[in-house]
Image (cartoon, rainbow, N blue to C red; front, side):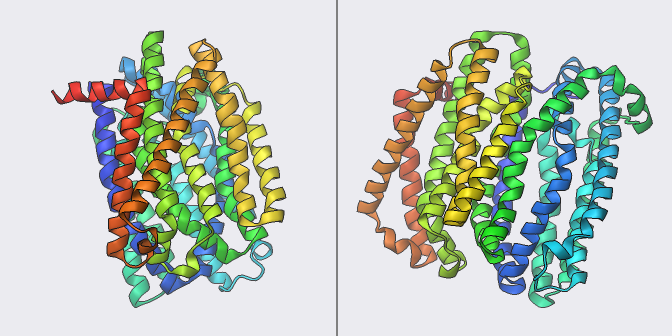
Length: 513
């Protein structure tokens, strides 16, 4: 373990993740178009639905990796190599058990594929090849790649991101070439599995280089599990917490398949590809600060902790607002030029997707501080959030179809993530009234809405919105005008009303001197 500072590691994480983001962005949009054209919308919808269904098998893991990461903070800070080895050994033991459970469940689950996909336009050989390819790739994480948690806890997530991006980009490029010239489903999945194995080899080689002293022993982990009762406690609490996010992410494509149609899963997936790439940029740049926040809280300076929260919340609000506004204003035009008019969904669907993007990014600050304080024991909250999501999605999905299903996560997140979670953090973590949060939240929301409508009006004067869909040149020009104006106007307004942004800018300027 190096003696690099929290700030230095966070900046390096942000730099590497940003570079990898733009590489993956270009590759993802090129590959999506090629795969849809050469393999068909049904194939993309099928693989998306299958991966969502397989995701349910990973339910057994939820909470273990996060709990281990939390427990590792202190021994990493203390450079306690012996304790780190013990914790990673326990992690390996737990992940081996989970991997075996998932393998068994996957074999049983495979027997029901004919009932799940009764009218699928592919041979059963292809369906089972896809299933076992994705299942095997998932199992690699449990049996081989589990030690990567140490890299994340040590704020070296850029190591994971870099090697993952190299493997993923190379894999996708090869798949595109093979699809264009051969159009073979079998080769597509063969490459998928091959590069999953290659990534595992590269990642573990790097872990051995960074931590040559790391010696994990699964048999030892089994004996040591009782020595760390806090791991079991945190796993149980975090298991329930992770369910809400898991349910919403994994079940949405399946609900769309059930209540709308399989091709709509692919159309929805095109939009989610955009938002997921946007969100991955922010996650890579800002989520890596989680370990630093845990260390900050351990120092016990209440005023500094609260000021850091305000700063990070303001920064996330600014970034989330700008990105969500760009997705809503430009999303349909981009899909139109990229794939064609037949792939464009309604403005209301795009609005719901943009709101989900905003809420997903903004919640990160509160989640990081709850995690830093170890506030996991409100296990009723994720259960209620999941219930609200499922009930809302089913009821409104029956009435309105796709827009109704997408109302589910917006409603559930509004109630639990934006009403309960802030109250929990401010009352039990910061130990101050939650009114402070609502003042921060509402002032930033009002500022973002003001900025959006001002920029929309200004853009309309400079550049006609109708021209966005004419060609790539006009789209790039129009989107650049909107994005630049949104950044400038939002930053000016935020600087005027947000102490957090003023603190961030002051810190940034001082670093540049």
